[in-house]
Image (cartoon, rainbow over all chains, first blue to last red):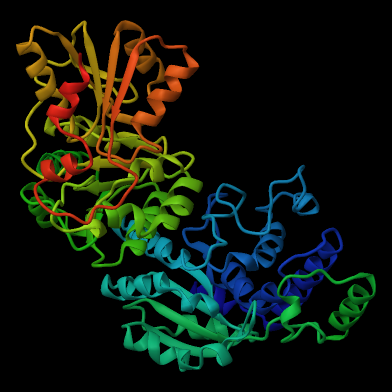
Length: 275
Length: 303
């Protein structure tokens, strides 16, 4: 992990995320709908996990660390990163959501690089706790990374797992909340104003927790490298749903929709114009 | 039965360092104390948090471990149902969900503590296997099997305490195969779980009347031994199903289906709980009797 921090290059990371967003936009033209807003909001988080935080595989083996996407509906970003890393075979994403392919709208355990089936919210963090226990029991030292949605913090089962992770002192859990303030029906801060402040809630549950700009990869990587390390760690990441394409940003419709041909062109042009 | 479960699990834990038990604020006595004392890292008490209990077991299994989830049956299966379905069934993970005190054993605790439809509910999940041992030795065999299998999830429906031994002279236990506890010619009683002791009682009384009865433990409720049941329907002129479960989705319904599919010619009677909640209290026998299940009622069906 530390070597990843040392070799970190923000410009390279930004270029990667631009490429990932573009790849998702390209794929959006093959299907009638996909979860684009929630994939764009956690692009930098998932990029940081795979490309900067998780240790590299040793001699062709898998990384000793694990990533489980608890907010399964964001998996387009996971798919394109897995493809970029060579874990997801080329051509698989072209068959997304078709009878010829094996990839659907939510991650399915057994597909390349997918460690658990998610899509129903509130399941991921308990599975992360179980995985972290297994790593501890075997003294294999693996870190379990996960990304939750802010809407997922409404699930009681999430808080069962929050309580257990700290009670079991699982120092090998590193979690992120993709705090984009939107869910299917509108702004989370309007429907659930008492969810805030989020960071303090995790701290009061015995976690080490910080808040960062979820689109600043340097800040994400720095936050994780500076964690206490004696308890589970939560990064509450301020993000923008649909980040990177102006007409998608903070517009609920883009939770689950594919751009038409004109919208696609505008989106690509906007992305290309960004630094 | 729960104590023999604990003994068998402890024995397996000594042999397999990847065996975990995740309990929800309840624990079998006896050997489980030894388990938690000797292997504190593999005895996890999540407290009153059953959804997390199932999810944690799934996470352990995803890393190759062999976890058991343990609490009272209503809370191990109904409360976290979607976790059982998605995390265990959909991902097909070798996690054993122990439903302790299933049926109406908690006869004075009310309907919140009864599992009258657990076989139907668990059996509806693809990949789920179901075992309901009839006595402590069968529970030991089943527990050992669960601790070593990698097929997928298991719902292990066990009793509470004080069940008599019914399988002393029976053939060896085998997953997925019906087990004759005794063989007779006139009547065949199919049963599973704790209520099998009532089937033995009925068989003993029939014997006193000069009739001979087979008693079969259908301990594996999924996958069901269809051939074994079809064979029982062929060999006996009268087959009786006795089960501590609602009429839908249990052994009675399955046996009727098999009887139809195989054009069985025998007489078939079924004694099940009704499709109704229970608001009355009393002993286990009294609750069953209020739903029409008693040795006398079953005997009256045998002409």
